[in-house]
Length: 380
Ligand code: HEM
Image (cartoon, rainbow, N blue to C red; front, side, top):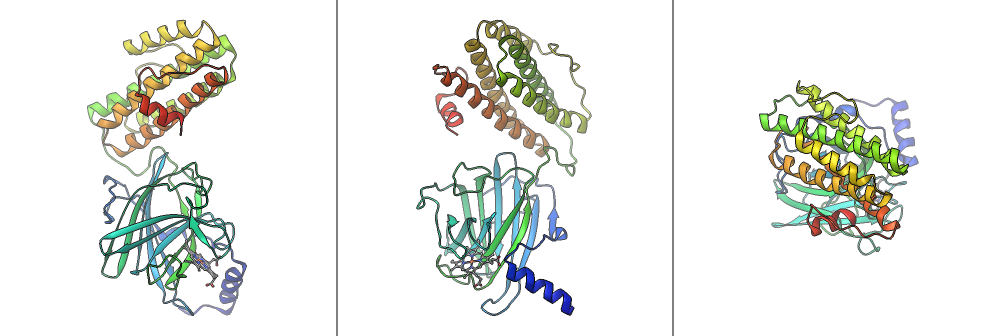
C-alpha cells in the first residue's frame, strides 16, 4: 500500500521529534497463560499472556526485521520473552526519557548454547549503556535462558517489577510501559543496531482476576479462597480495633489495605460462584482457629502500642505462611495471581510493622516464618 504524502510527512515529523509512536493495540494478542513459565529459551504456546510483533523496516543502515515480545506479570514479577530475527544481540529498554536516554535496558545474546543477558542503563541519548552494576546498581535478572534457531534468537527472562535498583524502572501492574527495542546482526554489545529498532507501548496486566480465564476450582482451591478471604477479614477487623485503641495511623492504613485484599479474594468468590462463610460485619467469623487467633491477638494487642504492632506483625507472618501453603496447591491461574498479589501485600505489611517497631527502638524477631525468609522480607 502506498502512503499518502501527508502520512509520510507526519511519519517524518514523528521520527525527527524522537517521540514514541502511539501503540497499535491490534498488534497485541492475548491468551490465557495456562502453561507454567520456564526459562528454557522456548516460547510455549500458552506460556505468556500477551504477545506483540514489532517490525522495523529495511532502510539506510538497517536490514529490517521483526521482534516478537511476549510477556506475563503478576503483582511482583515480570516474565518476558524476546524473539528476534537475527543471530546478533536483541534488546528492550523501558521508559527512555528521549531516544535511548535513561532507558532501563535488557540485552540478550546467544553464542552456541550459551545465552547472556545483560542488565543495562543508557546514560545518554545514544548510549553508552553500561551494566547497572558498573554504575553502582545491581544485576537484577533473576532467571534467564536463550536459544538460537533458524536465524532467530530467543531470550526468556524473569525480573521483579520493582527491583529496587535506581538503574531499573520500577514497573507496576497495569502500567503502560513505554519501551524501545533494537537488534544487531552480531553479538558485540557495543555494536550499534543495524537490523531494526523502534518504540512501542507494553501494557502490563492489571487485573487480579483475568476476565478471560474460564475454568473451575478444585474443592481444595475453593476451600483455600474462602479461608484466605476470611483471614484477610480477620486482619481488617483486628487492625480496625487496634486503631480504635492506639490511634496509630498505620492500623487505619493497613485496615484499608486489608479491605482491598478482601475485595480481591471476593472477586474470586464471585467469579467461581462460591458462598462466603460469613457476612461483612466486623468481628464475625466462622473458622474456629481464626476466631481463636483473633481473640488472642486482640487481647494482647490492646495492652500497648508496642504489643499492638507486635501482634499485627505476627498476624502478617501467619498470613504469609498461609498464602504460601495455598500457593503450593493452587493450580488455577486466577487463584495464583490473586494469592501472589496478597502475598506481596502481606510481605509489605510485615515490613511496615517491623519498621515502626524499629523506630520505637524494638527489634522484632520472627515467630512463624524462618529467619531467612524474614530477612528477605524486611530487607526487600
Ligand atoms: C549498542 C550500542 C548502541 C549504539 C552505539 C546506539 C546508537 C544509537 C544512535 C546513534 C541512535 C540515533 C539514530 C541512528 O543513528 O540510527 C540510536 C537510536 C536509537 N537506539 Fe540505539 N544504540 C545502541 C544500542 C541500543 C539499544 C540496546 C537499544 C534498545 C534497547 C537502542 C534503541 C534505540 C532506539 C529505539 C533508537 C531510536 C530512538 C528514537 O528514534 O526515538 N539502541 N541509537
